[in-house]
Image (cartoon, rainbow, N blue to C red):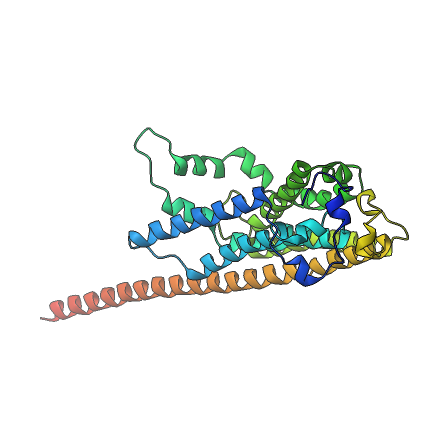
Length: 318
């Protein structure tokens, strides 16, 4: 399909949307290449660890692969074609690639895998691992992962894009559309990265603070969806005149898009909250085990001291 504009004849020939049609394979070269490259690099890291006898959790691999597949679902099927002319389908793409995909990718701990799998460069040299570490500790990374940056960025990606001419400008060309989707994915990654706390990063708040960061952005997401649902006229020019072959009303489609945005604000919140509670529980368990081991060592020392004291008394008695 030609994504160069909304008036192409192929877009006009799109039949009414159904789920079966939406899931048909229709690859975008940029995202297909990116997905295959991500799977290949992650697979290389896992194989490298296994060959040298190190373990890697299967669950992390499952999460990462699932995350890549959700990106492919949004961008390499006819969802991407219909998303160019249907606001509701576009919103499904947006929600998947900015809220579901980042969570799954981050649960796969790709940064941790890279740090463990990449070889250490020789003395005085800098290889990929050293460059990655330098990036993680850079001032730039401290800024882009701080909640004072991530939360406003997350909000601006909705209001500042859809309610300004920028959205229509990006939708006029395929590179613009790709750039917008890459932005959605990147925004989701930097927003959820410090909250998930799986990979190392410059901003590692406690579990309560992570929950507060999570819920700080979600109400604005819900309000955005409600604004679309309550509007009495189409608000985004790109979707004001859908092709007649689709048999849809622009306002009804926009209302559906708002409902999708509102509903999706709840889904990632639940997923992340479950992950955080699980991580918190495991952290408490590890801390309890460390405390028990320390108490056992202290108890052994006290017992040894007591035995030594009894032995000294016995020696004096003799």
